[in-house]
Image (cartoon, rainbow, N blue to C red; front, top):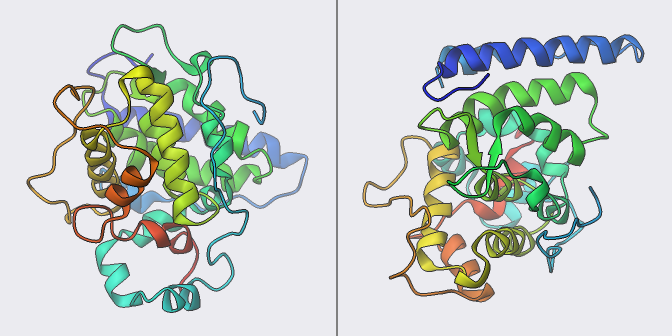
Length: 275
């Protein structure tokens, strides 16, 4: 269905229609009210157990939700100015993705396994038609209408940028790493989850500086459109000339205030209302 060169706008509308119908059917048994569609986003164009061959569980992940109830005070406590943060990050998009702020990073690491990989020569790719099922697996407690509302935003603002060639596939590791950035817990636990996911993808090749730069560039492209640095580029798998990083080096590279994603620490808090 998602052939190469397919019209992403049409695909997003089709996936949203299917998601809405699924939510309506599920909510009939619960009496849940439908969630309003995020039409403004479209108008801008824009397993708990680890399977064999999967990544190791995330280490150091905190079980405390970052600012789930008082995000504004949480930002102030961490030394962030709300006005500056909202100018640097697309907060409305993050708030449409609020259920992801409750996901445990380790649950995303558990999805990094060959069973989720399409049989492609291009690498460890996930079919876009499988993305919703993957998310349902880690957000099984989220009400149907809220989940489908989130999926509409995810389709247009996360999955579409991750498939610029419109192939109908995305890099599974990068998708999980982007989702981990919004997950439940402190910055270190979320970055370590991303490191574990990358380690699964790279195998014996190791995680490199170029991999960290690609991750940062992707986060900027999705969550800070218009704020990307022109000199930053994605690395793909071309890492032969790039130094390898250990966990501490990867953490420093991703969260660096200048060359990393400076707002990484507060992304989960920004998924909630700042009123």
